[in-house]
Image (cartoon, rainbow, N blue to C red; front, side, top):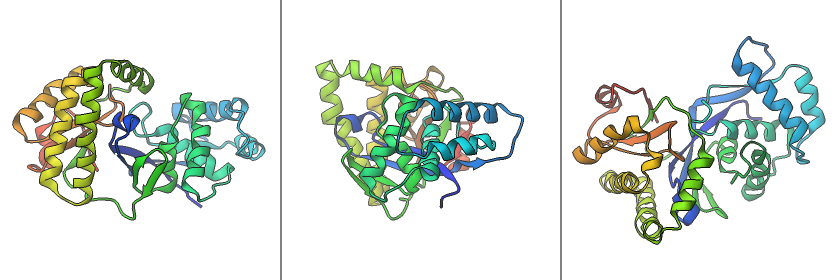
Length: 289
């Protein structure tokens, strides 16, 4: 039985997965959550308890044992998590994975479990693909060829050079996805996403999995530049100078990590190690992947 449920990082495929590109999602064990019966005086404890009670009373799902959940809630259970909410690292996905593990009936069938996890997470997001809780549940990298074809990778690819940049600002992904869907009505934008961005994402994933770092940087640079030109609403104002500096110098590149608009931004450099990048971008806290 699982005891910890990690965060997730959508390394590549944000937005373009909605239009047919591949995507690569990874568990991020530096941030995680677990069940606890220990009462503590904190907002995290209070918010978790309220959320679980709300889920139990209003979710209306029949795939989990609500009676057992009610008993546990009476005994003081809560989900103790270090995953920040609204930062694109799957905070609700970890909770849902934990609920499914403790109160559901995981089948071991990837698509079936994904379907059930999506139903559970719908309660938090209105509509869920199930990918976030699936990553937290499987705890292995997932190569998503499309929503109906998901491959579990046996090991985490070499993530040397990658880092997360903390904007310090949470965001709401729903509004940003709506903006993206509206922008798709522009034929030029839609064509660019299909013919340029999606292909660069696929090439970047292939380069990463084949450990071709020079090609990887090349494709990430093009993704960064495309997002700068076509996704300005998703790039926080405070980070725009760092974004363009990376494009211009080639010292590093920044790209969206999930929906954007705040949370974490993904970075990559072949020139500097992690500590050197932290010194270079000393206005922000970085996290190593």
